[in-house]
Image (cartoon, rainbow, N blue to C red):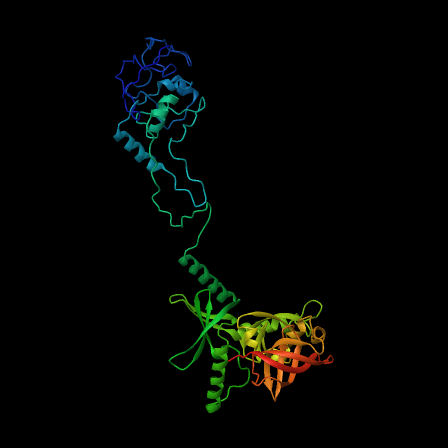
Length: 480
């Protein structure tokens, strides 16, 4: 059978024929029966003529049944074929003009799904989606208006692969909503903006305020309000946290009055200034979402830690921190001969002789505010939660002692060292090999001072105290 010709009829419209006339060209093989003599599934003649064996069924004006009625065996007898129509009978357009492409794009835009979410692969661009195959017996009857017919299916059904490749491809309509995430070089990577980071941190602060969770920040400043209050300013991931000085737990006794109160506040201000840069814990006591202001208390955080680590016991009845245990502590203040540490909510001062087996000329050369060190808890006073005190040292954590170091020296030998202190005519020296030494005399005309590099001659060794005793032969370099 020769291929039927196609008209330029709009695929969205249905051809209406006058009553009594039948088409002579472009008739499908298994189409509507025009008389009762044509059986279901019987093929039409190749010429396209319809046997004139009866009047057309129906009322004449309605050539097709209602589109909403289901397809049953009775409807087949009323003028519908049960076989699927041939694809060659679907009218198509060989070359569509620009206006028709715009109409198609407009219709595709109206039915286009939402743009894919982040992380999903984008929809392929180019060819339209493939036509859905319809099985035999699943076709719905056509109507005169065909409101739900897809023009793309009608226009592309009869195309060959060569014609489909030569046909201009419709451009995909971009999504109406623009993506706001940062476009990264690496695939599937995500970079947070400054605004996103602030929102996440503020959400964390709000949760900590509601759940009474302990947070940790860096003491960044000391301010004075117009009313005369002293505030400790803590930086927590870029947010400013204000802590009143009385909530820093720097003083646990009763507050004095009048002149004594002013002296106490001055001393607390000096202590607070030495703690700048220290790492401290706090609990959020109030927030303002509009200005994003935060007020906190270090006292509540320290009391909670004291309760958990010093007062509470485990299943065996033991405290988490006991005498003789080595714990990690934060250095919150450093002076020349003393440092102050905070160990799980309790502050403790450690003097220079308990910091190291070696003599230290200045503790600031070895320790700094904000660092963490290992200490050994020597004593604990658990009489009360607010009055809980401890004593600790650092040198007992080291495995090397003075008795081990003194063996590195030999009598009547000379060694280089540095002066750590001068008191009462006695010069204290730390030799470069780590041995502590004492000199009662100096052969150099210059007077030795702290941090001077000297040459030391050993006269004898005191193994009981672990020190070397001798004289300074000369000053190598003075610290002016």
